[in-house]
Image 1 (cartoon, rainbow, N blue to C red):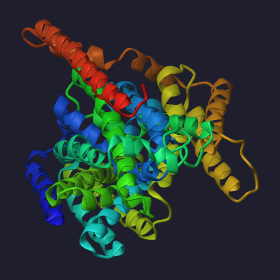
Image 2: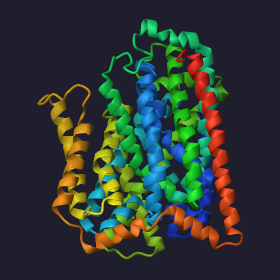
Image 3: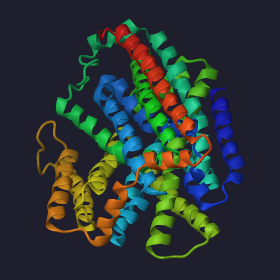
Amino acid sequence: MAAGIMIAVLAIYVGVAIVLIRYVKTEDDFYTMGGRGSTLLIVGTLAATYLSATTLLGIAGQSYAEGPLVISALGSFGAWIGTLLAVIYVGRKMKAYGSTTMPDFFDKRYNNKWVSIVAILIMIVGLIGYGVIQFIGAGIVLSEVTGIDYRWIVILFTLAMLAFTAIGGMYGIVVTDTLMFFTMLTISVVIAPLLIGQAGFEQMKGLAESLPGYWSIGGTEDRHIGWSISQFLVWILFFACIPALVSRVFPAKNDFVILKVAIIGVFFAPFMQLTVFLAAAAVRVLDPNITDTDYAMVTGFLDFTPPAVAGIGLAALMASIMSTASTLFVLVGFALSRDLYERLLNKKMNTRQSLNAARVGQIIVAIVVCAITLARPSAIYWISIYAGSIFAVGWLPTIVASFEWKRMNSKAAMASMIVGVLSFVGIGEIARLGWIQLPEGVDELMIALVFSIGILIIVGFSTKPNQYEIDYYHTMKATSMSKITIKEFLSKPDGLAKIKKQYKQIYTIAIIMTVITVAVWGYLFLMFGFN
């Protein structure tokens, strides 16, 4: 029954995507749904992408094994800070500058072929790594439910995802993501409380007696505080510039939608994660003998909830995987076709040819991701950290300096991106081989970030921006989403009244979400004795 419900829900998602193809008539529809994204749609797609296999399988598994606070106290907190930065800082600015994709920004900012190529390669490598996580998650869930061999499941899921992502581009993804978001909410508001209720708050707190450190930041492994801080930093830096989140801003109608999304996301991001982590601790009480911890939540659904609820939970888990995986397919397909092949190689294509090229790019990415997934090289959580760190050290310093520093130029951008990625990979591999010993609490991300920022500053002061880069910097400073939105509203009848109405809505939403947040977190703190 559980498998049947899961398959039925997933079939609905695919059916909706097929129906939405009629709305994809132009490249703008395919890449940014024509800028028609409402608050509901953008909140839905953002939250759906945020809650991926990393949370529901990888981090939930670590919460089961080591304790919920190892990640939720700092890592999850850093993740939603990074999400806020992705929405109101990086994404909002790039949308104002007319970017359709993130590589668009690099192209517009520097008008330099090699800067664009390096940026695109970082994006492709990072997203493929993050995509592998989703595919491993799909293989775990579906093989557990159906009994079909993991390898065949991965191959079948790859084919299904290709059919899903090639249909409607970003238009189809945003709408189906919103449907998936409401399915995912069942985990946080129905299934997690059900598992916690069966385990009992006292029994969950009692895990610390048999598992010392289970309810501490260090966890059962007694991790150094420096490790926890590094997780806090990596999730801020990663989420602030990952294309899967930043690109969610591009379809938004206007700046009011973006601000509302930021406010609502402050609540849903930590809420949806923390309830999952607590539910994983509940599963530890109910079944303390799960050896492959990536299966912890799947076991919780199948063994400790009614079949109908389990089916919805599995559908929600698969929705989180499909949402993130479909986004990555589309973004990398865009990068290969539109940003790399069409623009940088100066290949002139009409709308039909461009869309077909994007789909070919998705097929190429699918084959690569499928091959890596079949090997299943590491645990889900650690793959996510590695993929995320590439964006943190390769992109973020360059993006921030591109926004804010007048001396920033293509040479500094190239140096920062290349040195950041190579130092991260190089130091990490040397440390793993045992050739060097990193100080306790310091990892390769921190060192690589210092190198990336340091070389950016050195090259930036040693060279000068060209006239194009200076002119575009001033253009950016004179451009903002708020100005664009106000101008747009004032051009309509009763524009000023509509602006005032939008501001009132923002204040109202902020107050409501604050009250809900205090109530939810206050209740959890009291029940777990954190008061």
